[in-house]
Each structure stands twice: as structure tokens, then as C-alpha cells.
Image (tube, rainbow, N blue to C red; front, side, top):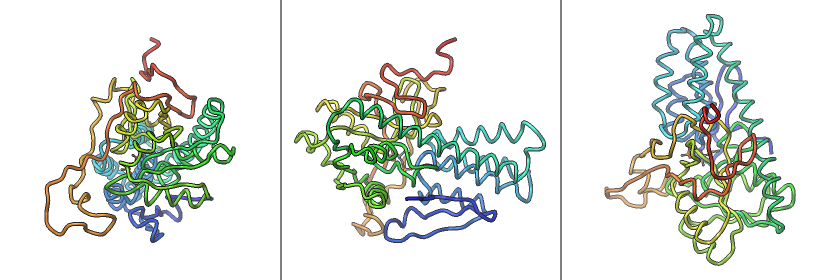
Length: 337
Ligand code: MRU
């Protein structure tokens, strides 16, 4: 399946509105960095790597008429979502590039930068898939029943995906029996988006409620858990979609290996532990609806954290484009100095 969650054509960013999937495949075309910022906030564009990529196209568009818009767009994009480090890494690298030479301070140079960044994420996905499938293939003899959470595929990245990419590669190697996809309340990225991608690849799957996972583990129906990441601290603590932590605790209790798959752009080597990660809190209104349907008409009090943090001791391995890291994890930049 060739699939572009977003592409840049005729000086416009064209993206699938992920809030409408899978019922409607609606493409939005824009040359406005403000519209792209809103798309990131509303989760029309989502998934840690894809957010970073979209932000770079937005920055390029911001300087099309006037290069002084760069800083305004930069600040606007920075405020869209707080947890995925990919956004901040991408913005920081673009800023360095922009100020490194006067020749870089225009639309076409920034666009080239965005395209290269997009391509490198695609390559990272391919390498993560290969590294993960090889490692897992060497350590398991049976065809696997894999549990995953949220959506980590082509809709969340510039390529085939991270955790999803590993699953896809395992499937191509005939090593997948079944994928269990958690629905991922409240915005249902698993129910709506992962099922959509699994269907497209014809990978056998079943969607489960998030709270079903522990029961399946207890019944020995799951061999392995693979999830993505929004930010990985130097010690391996990992922020990912809310519910990931409880999957990891349950996996540990049932002695089921728990893997995180993510590109190096998801590693925040500046922070030591997960305690330093800002966790996005979203509008509680999202909780009282199921898709676009309101479950309640009256207003209720609710708490809507978008992510949680899985401590490193619950993680069997972190799969990146470089290799599969095993504990103890140490992603500090200066660890060898
Ligand atoms: O709120 P979302 O849908 O952007 O959250 C996405 C996730 O939590 C993914 O698991 C993570 O970004 C990794 S995507 C390769």
C-alpha cells in the first residue's frame, strides 16, 4: 500500500484529515502555516514523527511572502502540542539551518530542508522495521500474536511507521498470526486508524477495548507488545499514548516482552528521566463523546491526559533505526565523555 498521510505539491501541503478516518477520506490542501498549526492541535495531523514533518512544511510556507514571519510561525508551531519531542527537534534543526546562512532564509531552501527531513523519517521507518523484525524473529519461534496501542503507522510517520512498521515486516516474513489493536480511548486512534491500516495491508487483526488487554494476557493470548513513543528520556522512560503504562505493567506481570519502536528523533537526550516530560492534557469534552457522537448531553467533570510515562524497567527493548537497545538504557549525548 502506497500511502501518504501528507504530501507537498504545487506549493501546498495536502494532508488526510485523520479525525474523519476511516469513514471519510478527506484531503485538505493549504498553504497556511496557521492552518497546519490548527491541524496539529485538532489531530487532523498526528503521530509524533508526522507532527515534526508537518511543522517543517509549515515553516517553509511561513516565509514565502516575508522571511520575517519565520519567528512568528516558529513560536506558533511550538505551542501546538507539548509532548512529542519530534516537533521540537524538527523546529530547532530548522531554526539552526535558517540562521546558518542568508541563503537559507527563503521558501525554497526551507522546503528542501523539510523534504529531506521527511525522506529521512521514511528511511528511519524502514530501518526500524528491519531491525525490529530481525530481532524479534530471532527470539521467537512461533507465529506471533502481537498487541499494539494507538496508531504508529503510515498515518503517524513519514514512512511505513514505527511499531506498525515492525509488525508489517514481521507479517511479510510470515511471523504474525494476529494483531490486537487497542482502541485507544478517547480519540480512538487504534479503533479508527490502526484498523484502517491493518485492513489496507490485509493483516489479520482484532480491535479490543483498552481494558481487555490484561485479560488476554492472563489467557496467554498475547506473545508480545510493541508500541511507539512520543518522547524517550535518556534512561529509556517513554511517553506514549495514555494506556501504554498500564499495558507495560500488565505485560511485566504476565512475563510478556514489551518493546518500544521509535526513531532517534523521538529520543530526548537532554532529559534524564520521564519525570521531566510534559504530558499534554486535552479538553475533557473529548471524553464525553465517542467519535463524533456525544455520549452525554449534560456537562460532566473529566480528566483527559493524552499520554503517560512507562518507566524503563518495564521495557524489554527500544527499537530504533540504529539497532535494538536493551536495558540499562542510556541515551545521554555525553555518556562517553
Ligand atoms: O495523540 P496522538 O495520536 O498524536 O498520539 C500518537 C501516539 O501516541 C503514537 O503512539 C506516537 O506518537 C508514536 S507514532 C509513530
